[in-house]
Length: 220
Image 1 (cartoon, rainbow, N blue to C red):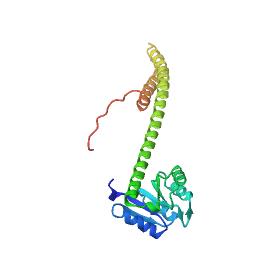
Image 2: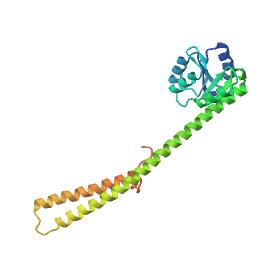
Image 3: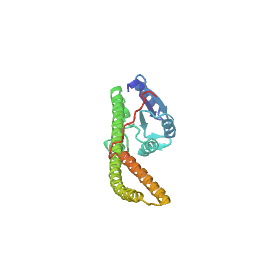
């Protein structure tokens, strides 16, 4: 994503501070503005930005709760907090609460601000990728566990079907078998065959054995 496609939402009630940030960013990034936390949350819901620059002192919210309330409504949103002073203790608390970074308003120089925004966006993307990878791993582990369970159950079920099928097959071959009984035995044999097919489908789904390939048309 080139910078001209990056959209920044600035949640700041100070006109001078906002204009300072806008002057730095407007030449290279798209900038939107909200002057209250409520308006900012609404703006994020309407069109999620790539990054938010957040002032902690707003008319409707104050302090770290401002950040927490924003992230409650926009999980994993890259947020850079604009603070009125350099404070390492506050900075650590902000990062622990979900901010990607923080920047003192007195340090709103083009190079520092642009670098901070880019790093915040990239870190958020990396965290999302790691989260997705973990979720995929968990799903894979669950599927593997299901496959092992299905394989064991299918083996036992196949053994039962084999006993039923063999018994019914032998009984149906008796020379003077009653026609009605012969029909019932035929139904049993058909049912066991359907059972075998179902077991095969279960095993294929569980990836315990390959299914037969199917011919498909390309572009249909």
